[in-house]
Image (cartoon, rainbow, N blue to C red; front, top):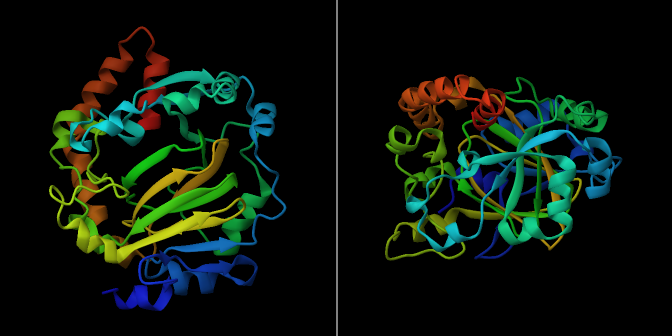
Amino acid sequence: MKTPLEEKHLSDSDNSLKQVARVDGTKLNPETFAKQYRKDGIPVVITGLLDSLNNWDLDFLRDKLGNQEFPVRFNGWDRYKKEKNAWNNIGSGVESRTLSFNEYADLLSSKEAHKNDIYLGRCALRKTPLADTPELEEADAKLGLKMPGTSPNLWVCPGSHITPLHYDPLDGTLIQIHGEKRIVLFAPSQTYNLYPLSLFNYLKHGLKLRANYSQVYPENPDFVKFPKFKKALSYRYEVILKQGEILFIPAGWWHEVTSLGDGVVCSINRFWHVLPLTRAATSWNKWRLHLGALMTAPYIIRTWLAAIFSKDREQKLRHLIQRL
């Protein structure tokens, strides 16, 4: 059964596919958004706030970012043939290489990025020509979003890329700039029905294999190994996020993100400190990752020292900061 909060805010299109509510952002104000969605941590799709924003297609991004360098993740597809607890890294823990945006765009244009799942992810916009985008700032103000945890981050990838099922310890806004994404979400109450990776991975793998990722492939689950996942399916919601739409993902909500189509898909996200503070204080998923962060301290110190004394110190430090 759904919780009372889910009954109040989330709608069923039928018995098997649950959709996150969509609201017209032009009719929202900060007080309404805080009361109906942020206070209780309810995901929602917000439309109508970015209708005047440029289409950030590949040509536009080349023009704006050109020779600026970014860390690019080379995921490969072979990992998806294995169980996730056999992976050596996941998400921002994947090893990255520094490329100019033009070099990465060439990989997209040639379809090499599609073939090998090459991903430009979580790259800060603050030092780029796209840092001051009035439409994004106005959307944040319209929703009354305050206390940012990060600057806006750019995500560019080929269609079919998958960001595996995970949750974040901060509230997030996912802004679809070009193309579409499908997001599958599960309520925080389902954490242990989703078989999160062990906290002890922090001792062995540090930041490379974080415990906020699920071991389950939600579109192809192994019910023999993960029988409790059947219970989680009652709490599964789905969103097709279209260009110009914003998805509010509260802290602790599990989500898997799949880029759609065979072209280029571009998004921006930003993390926000959890408000009200009572929601932050009572979120076990959030405290769980804080505990993991303490466990990874020895790894961070070793990696930081190794980066400082390496020949390519600047690049290694940049990649470590980006991973953090």
